[in-house]
Image 1 (cartoon, rainbow over the protein chains, first blue to last red):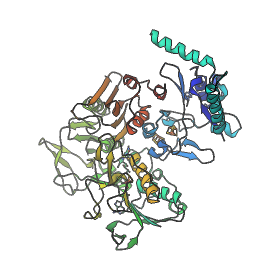
Image 2 (image 1 turned 120 degrees about the vertical axis):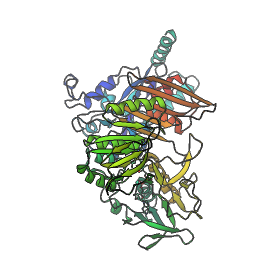
Image 3 (image 1 turned 90 degrees about the horizontal axis):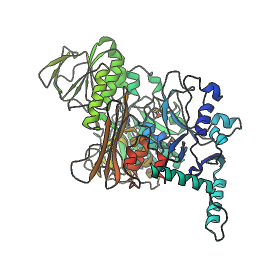
Image 4 (image 1 turned 45 degrees about the horizontal axis):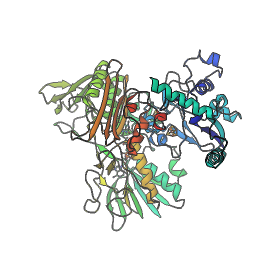
Length: 197
Length: 409
Ligand SMILES: Cc1cc2nc3c(=O)[nH]c(=O)nc-3n(C[C@H](O)[C@H](O)[C@H](O)COP(=O)(O)OP(=O)(O)OC[C@H]3O[C@@H](n4cnc5c(N)ncnc54)[C@H](O)[C@@H]3O)c2cc1C
Ligand code: SF4
Ligand code: SF4
């Protein structure tokens, strides 16, 4: 089964994924109208500033076992056994934040949402775009990521690709870099910026 | 293999699920005092404040016992365990044999010590049944007294306030949540409570309740009296273990367990609020009577009972609560002992209602307290639980914009 795989070393911090995610979880699914909706759609992927202020795309890992699920006081968090996706039922959620205290990645946010009862603040996180996927469309964040920081692939294939890249880079006469040199340059400039400040 | 589990709280339920997952042929008997389907104990406060009906309390389907082929023995209390014969006796004198036993009987509300506690309309708040009797009393009450400034006291006071009662909260210590927070945070929380219309009296306790049959007044430690139509007691909990043979199964405050959650008797395990395991940050035996630890312990105990070797690393005290406009999260050692060896970083921004405090021991995070900006608290908990030596400057963790990316260079 394909899943969203994050390669943070390729993130340039453009936050396109956040915009696409919020739009995909809006009522109208169109950016121009989504920004006029109440409640305002919010992203479930969060690009934070990393060590050198470079971008770091952070989303739910759909852990198994999932600490958030074990900690949920409302019995609102469950796993869709077919896809392995960890989901939150907004009707059952009591906004207690026990899940936020349990999530080791800090990916849960609390706000109103168009699929929750009106006016109710609930816990919200990545749902693997289950709606889009059921229509055969890739998750919104992957669709807009231009640098390959977010890809939609079989985990085994992605790992093989990574292993090959590492092998190429350490074998004698290596010509290709595991990651395009552009990313290294980008990180170096971020580091330099930080040093200047 | 015959498994018996005493207690159908979250620890017992998680254990039963884990055993069933690992042992399809197991015979699992679950003996529980409460007849209500497995439910969320913390959610009873939402029934009190009227935001939920009690039908919403169950956290497992009504077919839970059937689906997992568990033999439920509900409405029945275990009164004795014979660990030599491996037999349980219930109060109706029925006997059940077992090969492996889990004690997951949780805790009971700690009784208040004062004269007149037998008067009517003095309640505890631990079970669904308690909430039902509290709600029955509401139409006849105008003023209420809540004892205890801990989590349950908070939830009780908030619920009664939302039901339109005049509520006084009585706190023995100088500020609320004194077991979990420090004075700075305690004062911020106190200010927030007062804003919400609650009357709070600190440094006071009850000496006696008075009234004819029903409670009408409370006499306080400062010799004043306070009229009240009802009282909710939230003075903490104590492990429910009256039936445990103490000459066989070792007990301190709770039932002592090793890192497989086995008691001092082989094949007898304990989990949840009744079990006393090791606290990771305090480095000593301690009971952290909280839901996530009860759930985790239930799973670990169940796995070990089913023959796996799963280690329980120990618990970390923690809580998160929303007090009106303040989100309060406390993790591990928030008030470290005065001896050297601890580094404390704290920053309060009262105007914005923010406070952030971190406690380190030898470059390992052992405690944290956050008022607002709590989204990333789970990362801090993970650092505490896994005792990970910090590789980045500690001030990075103080920044509210701290996120997982900061941990990987
Ligand atoms: C109002 C309230 C709010 C709370 N809020 C939070 C919160 O926000 N966050 C948090 O982490 N925790 C919270 N807690 C604590 C949390 O509910 C407990 O830590 C958790 O329920 C413990 O689970 P347990 O399975 O160990 O025990 P329990 O849930 O106590 O279950 C034990 C069961 O065993 C039964 N039993 C006891 N003795 C016997 C016997 N001799 N024979 C048969 N059955 C017996 C009892 O009737 C009970 O049903 C709250 C608790 C209360 C009361
Ligand atoms: S919310 Fe956090 S803990 Fe829960 S599955 Fe996602 S990453 Fe894991
Ligand atoms: S906030 Fe909602 S999803 Fe999170 S633990 Fe509480 S009830 Fe569960």
